[in-house]
Length: 268
Length: 202
Image 1: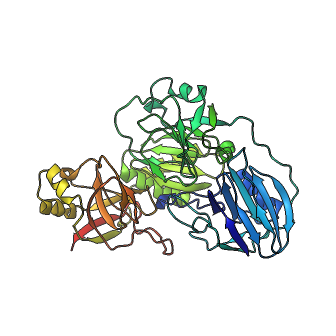
Image 2: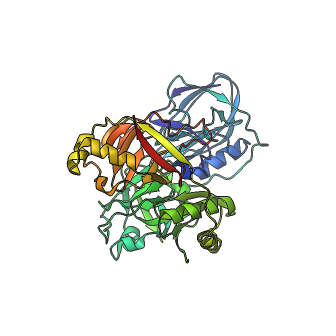
């Protein structure tokens, strides 16, 4: 068992989420930084898809009731280490990156909902947001021996590579260039549903409404005010705002490490 | 019939179709036959396909064209009846906006047979097509922060039922006890794209 002592500002359980259910209106959810989440499971020898804790901007503080093998990945990186019964693990506030994954050998065992242990903040599926006093069981999602892997680096400057479309025709000429030629500021009202970006507005070329269509994580959706929203893992499955460009799948993980107030660039 | 497609990043494809009926037909076929597909998401007149690796655009387009060319009669649609108590907070305002009495609004809302065009917004929320044209009203200027689960509402060309408490900008006509989404049920969503829906006043 693991006791949650502190979890502010936001700690949730995350795994690979709920892909395949979008036609029911169920968001993909899952770890925001998939690269760090997958790495954490390998460092402690878990089966792919085992659940970890996802901390946002700081924390958590945990007391281990039993011995365990633990790794931290993402904004902090600690290769696998042993904890003894009664040990307290406190992740100190970190200045770079937004998310830390706490991976425990065996995985976090909470009841899966629709095949996943992920907390979906928008749809309120999966376990509730963690709070002090919560007791977490360690599961049996062990895959093999813990792996030793190099520490991946966070880039000095956040640049997300995008592919134009699917609705370039919805925007005034030059809008794509405007998106990629200047930095955008990540608003503090950003979360796992979407990252709100602030900057010179991107202009629509039309006045009509787009009929709702399926949308993906990493899509840059542009509401009429011209301030793009970069869709995160808990995004609704359909949307009625045109998408000007979509982040390449290789770069999606980095969205999970953007901090409110920081700037991000997009490159074609 | 030729189908056009738009790339959505490097893992998804958006098929553009001539209407919702085509979208539902193509989505059904893609779900059962397309290899390497993770999600098949019908929209109002599109189908989004997401892939676990590279996008197979040629395969997807060929499959969509084959689905549309197939003139076998589709299976009889499922008909779902939703009993509704028409006491919503916006019923009087909607009546005023469309110059009908509240009773006439209810009668028209119940007279139509709707088609679940697609799902989205929140788990189990179906955008229902087939709303009487006289009842097409805009969303509220100020969305409500709390709309109770089971609320029956309209906005634009759509009607819908809020599966659970959520924010919402639609006009609220009434409420149903039917459970639109239950993660423990199989299938979890009461309505699927292509299903027919009728509202029955109680």
